[in-house]
Length: 299
Image (cartoon, rainbow, N blue to C red; front, side, top):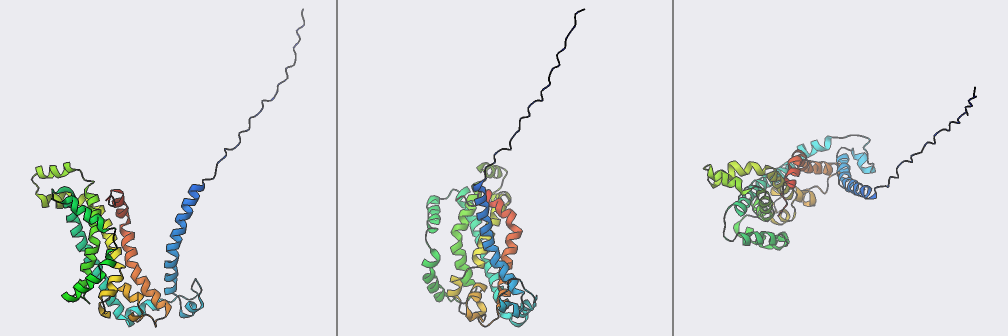
């Protein structure tokens, strides 16, 4: 009987291959981009936060220069409203001028943008060239003396209408170009279909096209609101009467009576002036961004 010999096989453990973690490179471009955005956001937010905190500081904290108030004091807003009612009159002037400018500019820009795109106008290219060319000149500075002389002759100085008219005129070129960019995104077949259904020019504009450019209207409202609400040069030049002045002039001039005020009360006025613009943009920013994406700034 043959003896069978079995050699004991040596079992070697399998070598485990170690997988090193992937070498992830640092995205310096993304870090630089986000860092720049954060820097400019802080550059905008910190001064507003400083003024807001100053408006609720006590006089003692305001004089010591501490950033965070030790004592909260809201009486500065009550002082502005109760003791200085002329500030409310000036605020009302700013509201009237801004709303009038926004409404009139939007109406003219809507009609002008619609006409430049969907109506067969003679000299349309010339009109468009003049509108674009006017953007390359500092029209507010160039026309300042002429506006002053014209309003003096017409008796419009020291009137709110005398501010609304040049505001509308100077903002009209940009506004018409914004609405032209919006109307160009609408297919001509939509206009032709409306005409085939029996709509005239006005009905086509009002019922068909206007709902399609509502986001562009929001862009138009915000642009003109910011421009009119914070305008200083024309308001300072054309208005001498303190009761007719708008808030930017009152805030920037010691003639408004703010020079002798304490800093927390001046800060309270600043917060009252900046709050409406922040509220308007915060409410409408969704439609504003949609309007930009839909071509509101594609001249």
